[in-house]
Length: 258
Image (cartoon, rainbow, N blue to C red; front, side):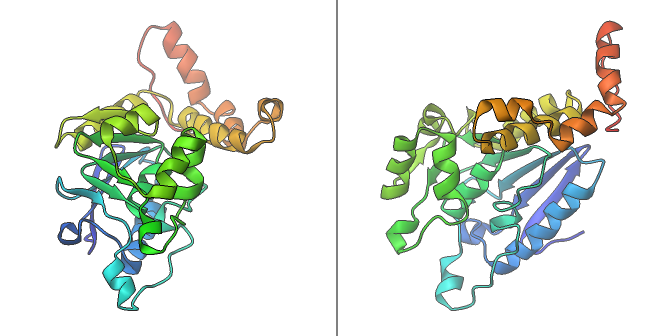
């Protein structure tokens, strides 16, 4: 299918979504969110797609955030329920997501990356939540996710100043998993995806669901005592048997995702 604001390429079990508005540094507006919502809905529903990657066209920008020119012209449309880029408020997606950040990830762009499970950043990547500098707030999850992913004082230092953080510092702070040479963000993300695909897809989803839902519990004991739905599904699956069997037989497992 052809899309107006992005490109979609499925490589085996990996879906690669490229934000494709390089003329505005891949900034997004309401129609973009509608398109991306549909793309991620399909990704979530397809049994043959196990990992998602999101990146931006060109080396200058992953996503510069909200298209302020559209907003200033009074043409802003409300987001879908799934949030900015169809991702930031999508709380029920257990399939892993990887952000391949090339260049600027500003405001909503950074919030897209924070909504992913893994961030691979090119050396020229820059991250910021600059909304207060234009009278706004990082309301697509930035003010909530960043303090949950790095130490609170370091997060507040970024949130309250809107300062730009380069990729290397992002790795030191803890929100970037890997820094790669310029132009290699997508290749790096594919390497991470390949490692994930070596694992049971059901076990991966159970692990993601348990990790995030467990963080919402009041204490560790409650999380440990809770059997989350994806864990139950995994324990009842054929792959739950296939994994130990393949290990005992010294062969690669043949995951069926069922």
